[in-house]
Amino acid sequence: MNVSDLLTEAYDRLPDLVRAAVEGLSPEQLRHQPAPGANSIGWLVWHLTRVQDHHVAEILDADQIWASGDWAGRFGLAADPDNTGYGHSPAQVATVRPESAQALIDYYGAVAGRTGDFLAGLAPADLDRVVDEAWDPPVTLGVRLVSVVEDDLQHVGQAAYVRGLLEAG
Image (cartoon, rainbow, N blue to C red):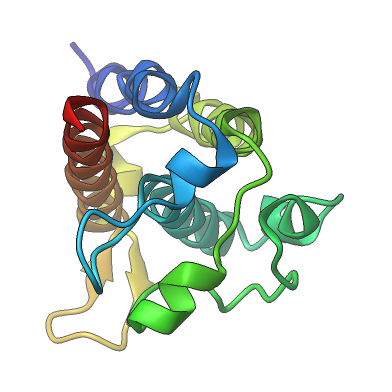
């Protein structure tokens, strides 16, 4: 298996996991916080999508999908490309208000499509390219791609857990 196939395999698991975490939930259920200060399902899936969108757009030196169309409006937010949810306070978590589960599925689908197109053309030598010199050691493309998929898998797992809590009543 080559590196492109390996990373594609990892990233291709996310759309079904995102759908399973949110499908059939009402906007109120998507905003439900299982405890004061806890993250909602909607926020978790929005955040994991924002992180992937932000980082892949940066790698491609392209605009984020978030900044095009009416994605932000479907979440009750401004189209601020710097707002990925990183460091959000409980009050900021509560401002992420997806209009529906489909809004989350659609946004993730658009981001995943671009990520998949990028991964399909990836060569092993590409992984050593430095994409962020702000860290010591500098972050390579390979490290960044693994970091994003790891973060996304953790957050979609958290969303599935919160859904389980919600359904258990």
